[in-house]
Image (tube, rainbow, N blue to C red; front, side, top):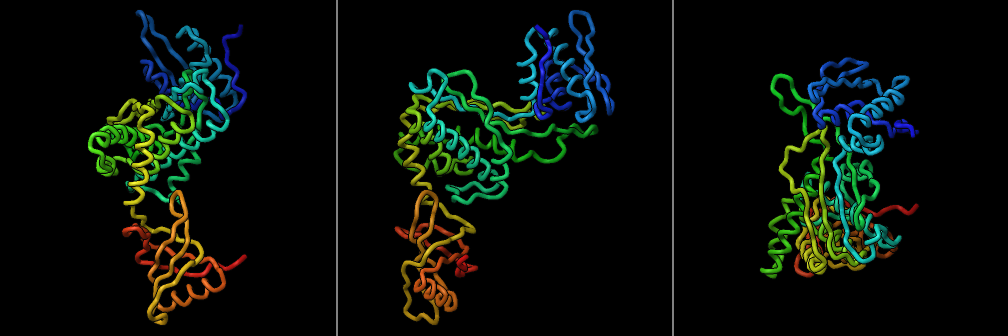
Length: 378
């Protein structure tokens, strides 16, 4: 059998940076480098071993050169080239693993319906962490920030791993560059790394909060950890995994790209048991009730109007979507905007405005309403 591994698509061929990071993680030293080739050296049993690394990923023959390098590594490490290739690729990836122990996943498979819900929940976990990186909140509305959505588009689900059912989320991060004079990190951490680290801390925070809340019977342990990334979206996503799979346990674990070592002490794994699912649904509801949504877009129909002097202004009640359901939201308007609301109520037109949304007793209220107007029919 040929020792070579055939890589049919250029996108699957590891980059020079990934190869170098892998070799360094295995004890190799880069002894020379140039624009075209670099040399990695390893001392073993008194012998000096050298490997040539192609450095022009888009040059002619690059795939073949990598194929030969993999064959050399396979002989040296005494294992097949394919797992070596996987390990090389992983050098640039932050990976979140969600392992589900359930009677319906013990053969390593999952039903289509349960899989749909689990993958959606996994997406929501990463998205909640990405939103929380910049501004931790008790809850995030359906419309997420553009930055967080861009991250979700870049992240990838990897192949499920061996286990009852282990789902993987992969975020590619760039190589860390150091200043030769200070050995300090150049630049800031990319959002991919920040989101994965935040998710690790947030899941750990949910675990701690659930245990404390069981003893205290209050929402406060969850509120205390909002700055850590705990929020209603994350609590709901964890509970959804249990509901979808009848899971006994959910284990989240994390590994970080070796080409960009993680500088933040981060939990390696977090384990949840099935008994927390109901509690997390309750926590999610409580966190949403206490949430404040800054720059929230209200869009819907005017269902009621209230004013003692319409020319001066009044309150419009708009039926709009908030998080997981539709709500009646009260908006205080000046005279001109109130007249527009009267017209929209009469004609059934859809209105929109921006403002700060929060709960006031049993009512949802928008403060500092701005940009109120009727959406033209198409």
